[in-house]
Length: 241
Image (tube, rainbow, N blue to C red; front, side):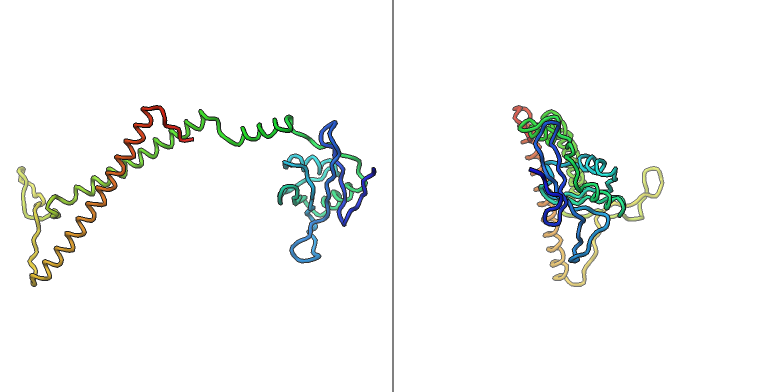
């Protein structure tokens, strides 16, 4: 049965899927923009494209239709796309050469059917050994980052002593070598009002206790996570994928 050149405003392009494959029909027309009736002079809208059509397939099609050059290929779903040509003349030549054209042989992948999808799946996902190496690298970087955080927590913890006093620097003391050295001691500043001082000290005490609790909690969670990972590795049950 012969294929009509025009159907519903679309130009038909017969293609043959592989050297001995079945006949398939692609429908093309000049692309219309969002404004009703306004056409894009450099873009072709194509429908009913074969499954898994690639840019190389479209370039092969354009080359078969007047050696036109494709600027961009925009997929719009399972079988629709916009084919932007380099200029208006190329777009017109593409559509003109498509009319009354005999079947164009469509390039097919080396594998098809279930073998094709198995091959696609293998390309999509990493090999187990490669994935394991990437996970190991990530875990190593994660451990270093956690260790750095832990060192920062320890440094902050050492800035406040057990009594909650902060050490300050004074200018009036000399070292054993006779060189002026800062005086280290506890700075006590008298308060005019006893109640105000007690209230301020109480708030400071609460703040110190809260900071200590937060740092201790962070340290405890880090140690627990580190212990769990180490146990899983020793048991050879650490499978993050």
